[in-house]
Image (cartoon, rainbow, N blue to C red; front, side):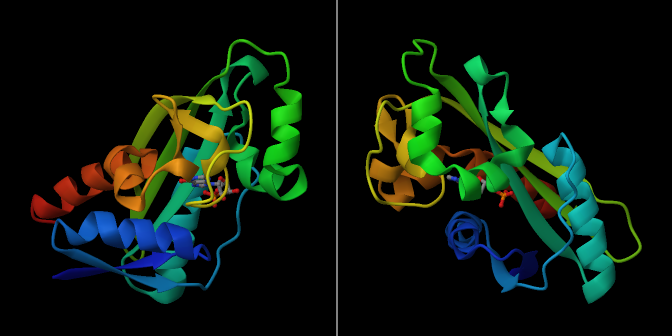
Length: 184
Ligand code: IMP
C-alpha cells in the first residue's frame, strides 16, 4: 500500500479520499498542519500553492484538495470563494439568491495538488455537472452537498458510496491514482 499525506483540516474530505483511493491500493493519512489559503480567483492556484507550501513544511510528499461550487447564473459564484461563502452565507442564503431562477446549472470542481519537497506541484482536476436544488435536501455529506443535485438527487440524499462514484473528488482522485500507478 502506498501512503500519501493528505493536508487538510476537513475530515469529510479525508474520509471520501480514503474510501475512493483504498480501491486503488493507496492509503491516506490526514495532516492538519494547515496552509495559507491564497485568495486567488482560481482553485488551481490555491491547490498549487498549498501543495508546495505543505510539502516543504513537512518535508515529504503531500496532497491537498481545493474544491469549489460554480453556479452558472451567478457567473460562477462562489467558485474559488466557496469556503468563505459557505461560512458566511450558508446553504439557506444561497438558495435565497437563487429564488426565481430557472437556470439552476452548477458545476462542482475539485483540484488535487500533489507535491514533493522542493518540487513543483502537479494538479489533477475533476468536475461534475448538476443543478442547485430548490430546497435543502438530505443530511449526508458536508458543505454544499444538500443543495447540489446530480440527476435529481442531492449529494446530501446519496449514500456515501453513490457520491464517491460520481463526484468531482472521485474524478480528480482517479486521475491522481492513475498517475501514481504509472510508477511515480
Ligand atoms: P475547500 O476546498 O475546503 O476550500 O472547500 C470549499 C467549500 O466547498 C467549503 O465550504 C467546503 O465545505 C465545500 N465543499 C468542498 N467539497 C465539497 C463537497 O464534496 N461537497 C460539498 N461541499 C464541498
